[in-house]
Each structure stands twice: as structure tokens, then as C-alpha cells.
Length: 419
Ligand SMILES: Cc1ncc(COP(=O)(O)O)c(C=O)c1O
Image (cartoon, rainbow, N blue to C red; front, side, top):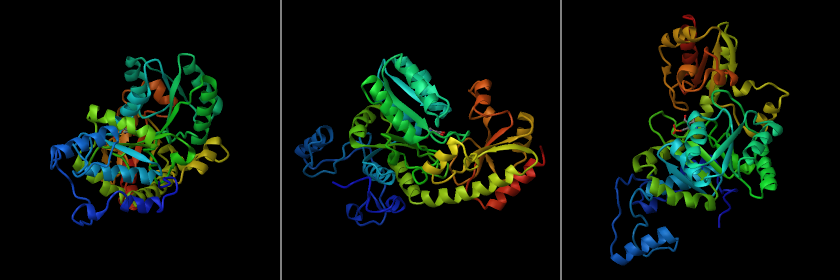
């Protein structure tokens, strides 16, 4: 039994080699795309054996591909899932048609009527809505903390939730987007232990690792149970597809696999292949994007029309968040926000003057993408809540990409002249 926490190769290597053996596909150097809805059997007995192996785990089946119908799984998904688990340093993974499909799968599987989730705020708005608007329709409840580096603040949210019923899940996104708010993952796991003592049952600890990705934050090394990643962002990395992943121990992932075949939210063969291809370069791409982001953040900080820059690398020395940043993050990311002197009118003038940078709401792609937070990503969030999390009418989010950094800065410089 391989020890998944101590892989033979480092994650950068596993991102290129794991999950695929050329002998399985006519010795092709790279995995083929199996564009098929279903798989054939050489005999009725093999068909039965393949189904028994799938549903009862009673394999190995004699003959056949091991596959049934692409909603239940397909070869590209097997390779991708083995690779995602290997990179994250855990046992198993499932890939979904979007990050939100992955989050929904976790909530539907691990949040039952009467049970609660305690989560950090801000959390990506889709997930916040899932916990606070959708899941309560199925009888679950929620509470949230606002300072993920403060034990008393997080514990107060747990007590509030436990007063309503058992807490089944603690959920955190770290760093937050675009606020750069961190959640101390060691503290989160400690809080799960305190909840277990208080209610006699340990909640599952789930972390959304989309913003820093698998090479710059390692949630399983801190003892979390499940990791959800929107592969749409850095892992796929080209703003050309949507995908999501859940990684974790086999015992937690297996039940989700049987549910996914009912929801029909698996990742299709072609998109799975595209993600596999992207995983080979994610370490390299994120490193370069982070280097560019640091240069751009430093430049913006010194610009007279910029009131402030919310960038993880600028987390003040001597604060609890700084200590968490240094212990937990292997980089400062490349998505951050800056705040113009002025409001919407100034922000719009600047955005409308850009020539190179593209206005769009995705992040983590090769193109630098830019947007006005209050009127796009946070359009549906009440103004007081936006202001409380540091998003003003002059806040602009920047996902720094892979263009030459001088060209990014030159475009920002000429656009800022219009403010
Ligand atoms: C942190 C985070 N988690 C999850 C999601 C949802 O992922 P997807 O858009 O792939 O459904 C997003 C999307 O913006 C996100 O930023």
C-alpha cells in the first residue's frame, strides 16, 4: 500500500507522470481522449463482472475495460483523479464539471437536515449562497466567523451553530478573494477537535484551495479532511474551461463517487484531458504569475492615484495573519486588489482606458484579467457587507497573468492617467 503522504516523487514530477502508463494505450506518450459515451463487453458475464466490480468493489473483473458509461467514470477521469490526489498528497480525488459542482457534492453528502456548517466569511459568493441560501432549504443551518486567525472568533461561530444542532462541517477558503484574508489551517483543525469534545462528533474540515493552488498551499499537511479546488482557475490556467476537484482520504471520497453518477456532474473526457495537460505546467505558471504579481503590486503601491493595495505579500509584520502567511503559504498568489482614490466613476474611466488587459471575472489564467469588484464579482453582495470586507467603490481586482510584466505595468500606467 503506497504511503500517499510521502510520495516517491515530488508534486512537480507527479503532475507530469502520475496516473498514466503508456502500455495502457498503444504506447502513446500522452493519454488519448476517449470520446465515447459507453464501453462494450466481450460477453454477458464480463458485463456483469464489471458492474459488480464498480458497485460492490468486488474486483478485479475478468476482461473488459472496467468502464461502463462515461457518467460513471471514464479512462481520462481515472488518470486525472489519480494525478490530482498524487499532487495534493492524499489518497483519492474526484473531478467535476465545475468548482461549484464539487462544492455542491460535498454539501449534499456531508450536510444532512438538522446539521450545521461553520464557515469563514468572506467565502466565494457561490459557496456562501450554497451554505446560507440553498442548503437551508434542505434543513441545514450555518454560522460564520470573520477572523480565521482568531480562535475566540472562530469558536464563537461554532458555539452559535452548535446551539442550533450538531455541526457536521467546518469550511474555509484561504486566502480569501479579493480580500487576502487568511484562515489558519492548524487552528481550524484544532477547532474541529474542540467541537468534537463539545458535541461528541468531529466535524469534517473542508478547505477551498483555489487561490494558491496545490503547489503553494498544502492543506493535507495541516490535517484537513477534504480539499475543494476550482480547477477552472490556476490548475487549468488558460481561462478556457470549467472544472472542479475534491481530494481527500478514500473513505470520504468513495461515497461521493456513487452520488456523482446520480447528479451527472462528472468532468467530460475532452475537458479532463485539457486539465491533465494544464496540470503539467501549473507549478511553472503559478510561479511566474506570482513573480509578475509582486512586481505589479509594488508598482501600484507607489502610484499616487492608488489609495491602497490588498496583496497577501503586504500582510503587516507582527500580526497573527503574517505568522500564518509565513507558516502556511509558499507564495503570495497572483490575484489581488487595489483601491483607487475615488469611486465607481474613476474605476470605470481607468478600466475603459485599458488596451492590453482584459476585463473579465475569471482568475488564474494566462491572460491578466481585471474587474471592478463592487459591480461584478460582488454585485449581489450588500454594500455594507462589501465595505466591511474592504471592497470599496474604487476597488479593482487584478488576476496577474503571464504577459511580460513591463507590458502589464505600461497598460496600467496609461489607463491610470485617465482617472
Ligand atoms: C475560491 C473559489 N472557489 C470556487 C469557485 C467556483 O468554481 P467554478 O467557477 O469552477 O464553479 C470559485 C469561482 O470563482 C472561486 O473563486
